[in-house]
Image 1 (spheres, rainbow, N blue to C red):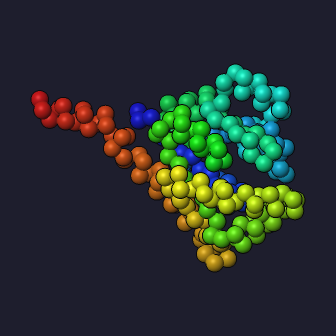
Image 2: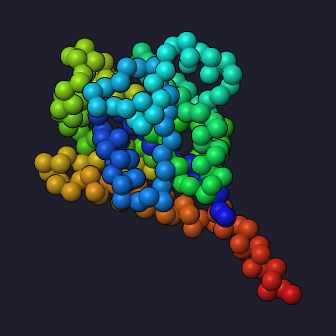
Image 3: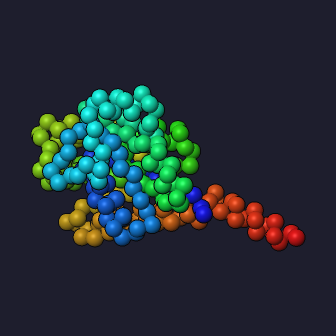
Length: 211
């Protein structure tokens, strides 16, 4: 069985990363997502263990001390982390695994695993990002100001990623979500047939032909 690949998806808050991942999983059950831990409070409708594992600061400190995280980072006054055990188990089962994490977490993941494939989700414009943030109805004015202020620095990090997906404005492109989902899935499918994934097969085939 071919081992799964690890895909990191990140980008500024409000770009629709979560919507893309949710729709991708619904359409393509051959892809899985790793549920991260976070110290932030649940948003309305979020369920512990589904969107995130919600933990206290004390619990997070303990996990850090135990070296339990694949990566973890401070993001907007909260902490997020991905458990090593969860990642390893799913990859060994042949699942292609998505980590929806911050750009800081992407750097850590790439340092630990050179085979990580990174995908950056961008908004089409500053105006569109602000509209999406306000449309959530969960952000304060201060939070929106901070997130918009951080956007330029986050976009700068896109140059270090393997792929960039522009999630278009739904008013301008009605099927923008579907387009973004299929672009991400195209990256996943391309990885499955890359030479690095077919090395063992090619060696075996070559050896059999030389008999």
